[in-house]
Image (cartoon, rainbow over all chains, first blue to last red; front, side, top):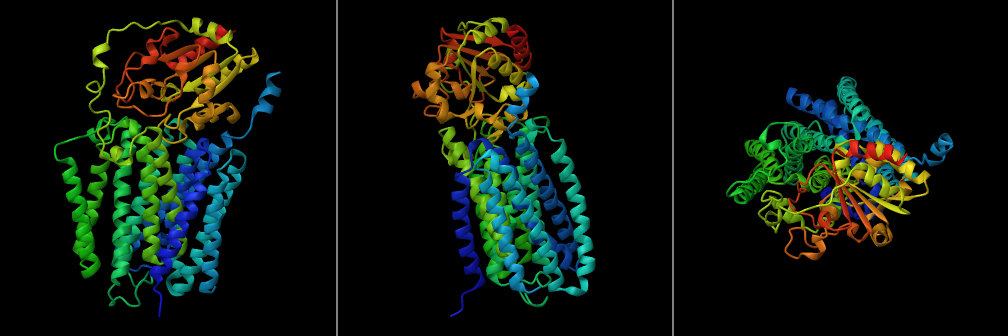
Length: 103
Length: 478
């Protein structure tokens, strides 16, 4: 009996939702905005599919769709991670330094 | 590189993504988490280049040039946006990014439909796509299209600076709206099944167009106050779109990453709905905020007296207090008063006043928005408390300073079972000895409700722009 790829993918899908569910409940509410920004970057993983489409297609329609998809996903890859970093920098503890300057 | 190695590298990348989310459980580990995320994406991209070479070495070189073109274009736009965006504009940026993912998913699905042989879905151009793959492509494309057009509308509503009616915060309602949505939804489903079983390309094209349309239709009836739910929901959709593409391309990493994002967005939507004591369907069906004034006793009690005071009076109360709890709302962010507020906090702390911040889950325009705004103003995160952690402390607080918040401190949620916000968890500001409320005017909040808190004897209203008022307070405290 052969098990189709679709079933394996479904197993991965269900288990990944479980992992995501438990990991995300542990995210502190204070960081929900960075969470959204970083999940934006992570969902830009579609860039993998986009790269395949951009590189391997041969028709004009396929190629242009692929390149467009790479560009759109790349906006999120770079934008998502960088803006998350920028926000998280703000959450750095600055209290001791600020006090030292104040005195 | 063998296919096994490629798959293992994809597994490594997936684990990095899980680590990235895990890091966000605390501010100190969060930056490390973000680095994990970047590493994961790096691994994924490099591995994919190897995969391209493996699948078709002949055209790989020119193909990769095209990839680099796309990367440079999108990457530079993304970098510039990330550097320039103001923290108050974060919800718009996030909505914009959701739309990017949605459209990218649509593009990939279209490319896969027109050239399945190139993407390894079928062996030769003459083979039909198996119906299981067609089902996955249909789902990926439809969810992607809904994510795209829905996010565009959400972006417009959030930015609030476009004249276009669909981009206004007020809900767009019309007769038979839900019926229309249902019909369009069913049509998409039917066409999707037609495509799945027959492979008819025109069915695919029409369902794609309909999916773009329904994305618009489901977001327009949702009012400005519900935007945190909408943004979270679209976040979730963008994840499911990525997972859908993963299914069609048979790529496990896309499925893992997509599911992580999908469940993350779903949890955030749930948290936001809970914080407003509304069911998800209630939000989605929309219209909240449309019948402002008609609901509740708001209209009848228009002529009521409030006690108002100046910034100086407020500053006097603040300096004489032992403990002060500040409740920031979106009004604070709009006035860009967070830096002035930090100055005030420093001055008060210096004079021996204990200052804490209380944040309601739906403060701001997206989950956690207010925390980021305070962090930007360098308010230390250990002074900032979530609702359930601080609610018990309001009773002991000498002064509560409410800045540009309204519905989240409205006691009607607890006392008036008729109120539209009845049962919504609120910050118990009314329990404090003295309450100072800063608002621009007596206009009601998003829910369009009157707020009993403003009329209490212990409440003093300070009218004016939050930034100006706080700056005046800072001067007066000195």
